[in-house]
Image (cartoon, rainbow, N blue to C red; front, side, top):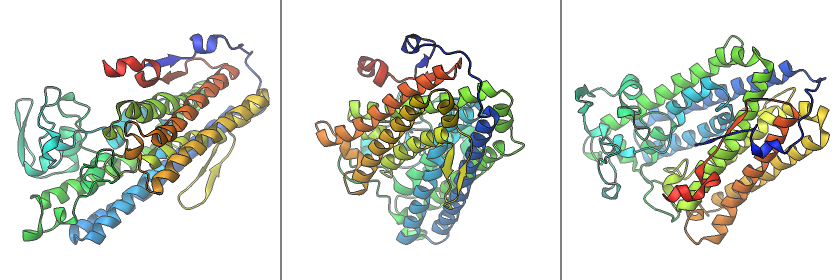
Length: 422
């Protein structure tokens, strides 16, 4: 991705205001932000514990019902986690960690069996079809690796991004997603992955071989996800490093908030996750591609951005975490801009909600990406346009608050579309 520094031409034409004296306390705004981050990671951890329980039940007594329960637990776990992605970009501690839990897209052949159409090793990734589930030992960088026991340590330290290839995603939500759903071979037709529960069955009932090792991988990946989320939740606690760093410099903290909002809105969601897939008409560019959950992924990313600006988050138990907000700061110096920002956020959420509603009614995100599907393109571009438009208002907020150093991530799909096809 490219970065857009707001001192550039996009903002130069806007009048620079003198540093305002705020009646609202910036420290209180940052505390609200940290409290929301802590709550979101706690909710992500608790829903992952529910997923762990369902995974353990599936492995212990495989059945169609147990697999479905694990899938539902995975889907529920994505709701708070996706709302936490807004803490990336501006907070290095989150950005450096995020690849362990939410990296995508992945070469799933690294993990388990794949359809023949997937292909084999490539010049870019010699491990693209390794299939660790079927291979208790393998060669990596000229060394023999003992994978007879599939453990969290093996996944994290040896397999994840093996050979320095980002597509070698061995850990996190999407590795678990693939193990629960399998490949989605429907292209731009309706339908998610359809892995059979017998992929986890014992003895003669086992399909596709190595059911015990497949279960071992699923458990290791799920257990690792829990430990990663537990660590991040602690970083936002009262004594956590992330909270301490944020509160140590008020202007840098507010900058981090707006960097996360702008980058997730623009380069990441509007660009890499939405516009790019539409340009390529490629369902492999879906964020939650195995489960066909991408409509929810986009929706809750958008909601996370809105949460930060408004300073409020509804937890999975229905309670609310709220307090002083960016909206309060902007309202004091430019009420019209605050109204504009709120309106843009609402417009985006309506557009993302329309994608979500359509998908839940049977018009899946895969289908929306099909070449020539005008209704699908209109839905996806509604979300893209809303996210891009709200980023322009985020830039205006940065200028109004007289902040330096906000760098909003870009995407070729938005900034240089011809480069996508080169």
